[in-house]
Image 1 (cartoon, rainbow, N blue to C red):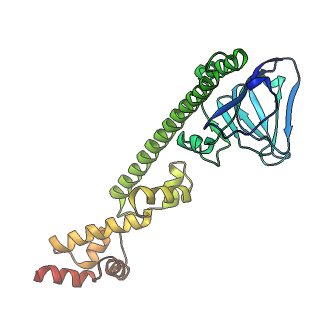
Image 2: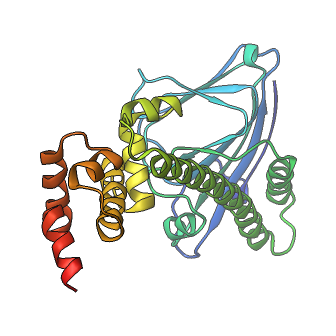
Image 3: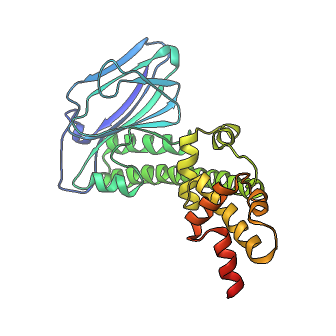
Length: 287
């Protein structure tokens, strides 16, 4: 096993200090190759905040209670808040390598939030950039050598780490939003092209690998309407245009836009426009 660490004022005791916005208390690394297991158990947590970066292998975390076992893979960061239950293990068989930093301060919660780390985040995907490792190693060095202004440098290095994490989170959100926009735009186009057919929302969602509830929720957020409401709106808009510009009967128009039952078509049209199809046509002809 390889370990290397540094502690503020050479003290291994965790502490809470609000005299400055952000204070790094300790930083270190563990690398397991031959030592079979390295466990940590703090039922009452610590007084400070902690970030653990899994740079290689996997680590086992028990969030909330000892029975839960969450396997956290390389490229992820785990965030612990003060007084949170802590239990986790590293195993040599997993070739685990982790870096950790403990920090406190009078404005930590707001600083984390400003970098996109919400209060409910436990595991955050950061990626496997060597830049993270360089920052952790630099913090360890600053704690060990205590050069002039090293405490300020430690706070700056931690902010650098958080900035990189924030950029990764922002990139993930952009990619997610691009995927969502693309999928919802594709769905809207499909509904526009096939509005007069018998469309199954369940079948469409399944064909795109989505759950029905997830698809409906995100389609509504994207268009302002649930999928079936969107389809009905397209049908009635086209029916309205046909009533205004053609001599087709109401029954024929209903079939053209996807309603074989003329009574049902009339009810839907009236619900959407406030008039029956026949009354709407007469109103248009008089105007």
